[in-house]
Length: 254
Image 1 (cartoon, rainbow, N blue to C red):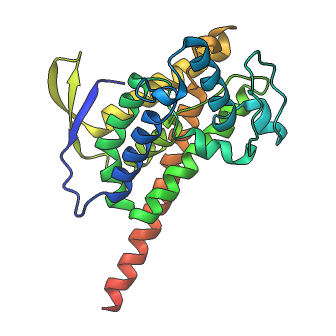
Image 2: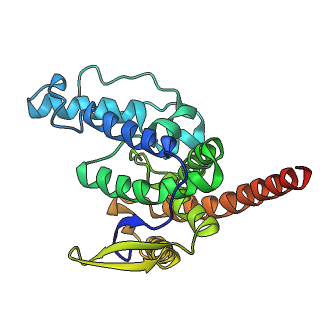
């Protein structure tokens, strides 16, 4: 992206409860998972910890081949007790609350904290929650279709948050966002510059993955970011238009 966003100048009219709840849930899930060093109940031995993490990801993360097949596939593992029962169709929802490390978690939560409240205020809490979830699920399926043979776990809220950024472009692109450039220089940028730079970068990286064999080994689901953004942009525009028209009709009645 163009930088690290710090704040948006749009004055939200009420507490963005859904955004704060999502941030809290993501942080708590990470802290309670074997990915967090604070979760000592998973064991301190490296091998035990690695096996706990493997089972955890097999159960809750998305495996593209499983998702497209619609059923859990047998996994080859040297870990004892690694067999898990998984509801495959729920994995796109559960994977949205998993993060690989602290940097992955914080980078997602910073953008959700800055842009989420604005989109929530413009769309309404229920519509915003639906858009967030739908963008994340659609982004996950899009990535699975681009990597149908992948058996690597996919996790993270990036697809859903990309949807929030897309919706932001549709409903409140005129805002100015205080952004930390090069990690040291705060500057106010138009919101559309920041979110569009994100999309252009993700699209470029997505195309690079398609053009250069082996680039998918980067471990980043760029396709999910791109399609999540597009889903959020279209969904946000439609929802906002419907809400605006409904509000206008009510004002005409009164």
